[in-house]
Amino acid sequence: GEDVEQSLFLSVREGDSSVINCTYTDSSSTYLYWYKQEPGAGLQLLTYIFSNMDMKQDQRLTVLLNKKDKHLSLRIADTQTGDSAIYFCAERSDQAGTALIFGKGTTLSVSS
Amino acid sequence: GAGVSQSPSNKVTEKGKDVELRCDPISGHTALYWYRQSLGQGLEFLIYFQGNSAPDKSGLPSDRFSAERTGGSVSTLTIQRTQQEDSAVYLCASSLPGRDYGYTFGSGTRLTVV
Image: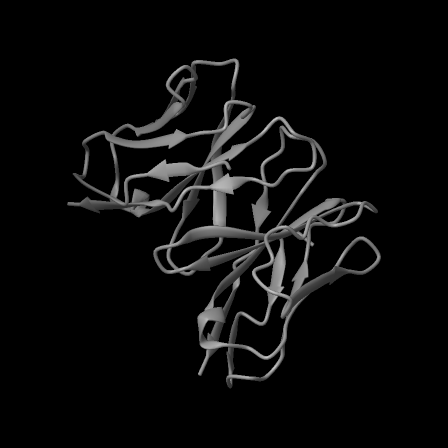
């Protein structure tokens, strides 16, 4: 079945770049997503990338997709303490009527 | 409404009791999803409603879990004879139809079974 894997923790200093990595197994994935969850809140969609793209940039966020290796990454430039949260990678297969499959989330801790 | 609304935000129940969790999706969103978030387990898919189609119940962990969606809008997730392992945050999300739309999540219901 489908599986999405992420490292569980990442710690960075304020001002540095953060890179959160994700691997997935479903080769029919068409859309891949990054969600952010702050304490006590639901998940907020940060960005997504279509599988025919290699890169997508949105302000401080850069998403890189290596479809051959089924590897997705999220780079946050100039990381701030407000970026501290759990980041979830999710994939959606090409099959109609399927729900998103989420990874277990990466907890990003930003120290000042 | 402006967002996905879930109630209650917190629920403490005794083992063996039934509970009902409510989700009010964004108006016009035909797709509605329930997920469960347990500590260290990420998000576990439970059930998916899309318009008038039969729901995808493939993620429900046991027959104690059921969900319905009335009038294509509000959804209720029911857990019968709750067990301690049911303790988790239950998240609801809604979206427009189509694969290129992400989900909008509610803030969740934290269920504690004692």
